[in-house]
Length: 439
Ligand code: SF4
Image (cartoon, rainbow, N blue to C red; front, top):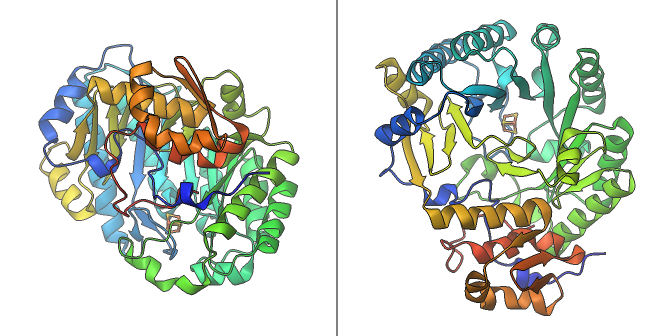
C-alpha cells in the first residue's frame, strides 16, 4: 500500500506539535515575555488551559514525558498547592479577560493524584477563571483508576478521556515495564462510558521491543472490538541518551526501520478498513467524533497535545514544564517540579524558556500545520523554490504534487508527511539526532 523509501525516512524530524519546535527554545524568553503576552489577551479571547500533573503511580520504561513517581504524598501535595497558587497568579494577571473554552489535564498521569484533590483543583480553576462551561479532557492511566476516580469523573462533566493502552501483548508489556491485562482496559472503558465520558481515546504503539506484526494485529483486533472513539498509533521513539529510563529497554529487540514502516502501514490499513477516519497517518477517529468532523471540514489543528479540533490561538499551560502558546510567543514553565514550587511559592509566574514567533515563523508554522492536518497547503512560489532541492526526492517518487502556489501530499506520501513538512522548517539543518524516526 505504501512504498518504502528508507533514505527519505533516515533523517530524524520533529513531531511538529509547534513551530518553532521545543528544540529552538532558549532562556532569552522568560517571565517578562510571559507577563506581557498575558496582559495582551483580550476580554473575549478564547483560551485553552493545559494543566500538567508530573506524577505517575508507576513509571513506564518507554516514556518520554516529564514525570516522576507519585510515591511521596507530601511531594504531590506541595506540588498541588503550588499549582493552585499559579492558577491564582495567572487569573489575577488576566483580571477577568479571556474566555476559557477547554481545560485539558495531562502529565504524567492526572489520576496519580487523589480523586478529591482533582475535584479541588478543578473547582479552583472554574472559580478563578470563570470557566464553568469549559469542555474538560483528561489523560488517564488505567492501572491507577479507582472507584473514587470513576465517581469524580461522572460528577465533574469530564467529556473526553485518553487511556494509555500501548499494547495488549503480555510479553511486550513486560518488556516496556507496563503490565495491564486486557480485562483492566475493558473494565476501564465500560466504566468511563457509564460515567458519560463521551469521547474516549486509546493510545497504542508500534516499534516496541519484541513486537511483531502478529502482536500488532492482535492488539488492533482488541482495539477494534472495543471501539474507542479515537485511536492514536504512535511509533516508539528510542532515545536512551536523552531519556535514561529507556535504558531498561533491550535495544536489540526493537524492530528495524523497515519493520516499523510495515507496522505503521498495517495499523493504518486495519483501522481505516474498520471504519476509522484517518487523521494524519497515525491518528484515527470514528466518523461521528469531533476530530473526524473537524478533519472533514478542514478545521483540524495541531498543538502540544497533537491533532485537535480546538481552534484557540491562546493556550495557557499550568504546572511544571507546561507550555503556553500565543500567536507570537511560546513560553515553557520551569521544568523541575522542585524549582517550579519555589518560583510559584515566591508569587512569581513560572515561564523560564521559550521562543518568539516571527512573522516568518508564523507563516511557515501554518504551512507545516496544514500539510500535517489536511495534506496540502498554499505556498508562495518563492518559498516553494527555496524548498525545491529538499522536496525533489519526494516529488521524484510521486509523494508530493506541486502546482503554482499549492502543494499536496499524495496518498502514498502520507507516511512521509513529517519529513515533507520538515522541508519548510528553516531551523533544521543536517540532522542533529535529537528527534525521533520520521515514522
Ligand atoms: S503512565 Fe503514562 S506518563 Fe506515566 S510513565 Fe507511563 S507512559 Fe509515562
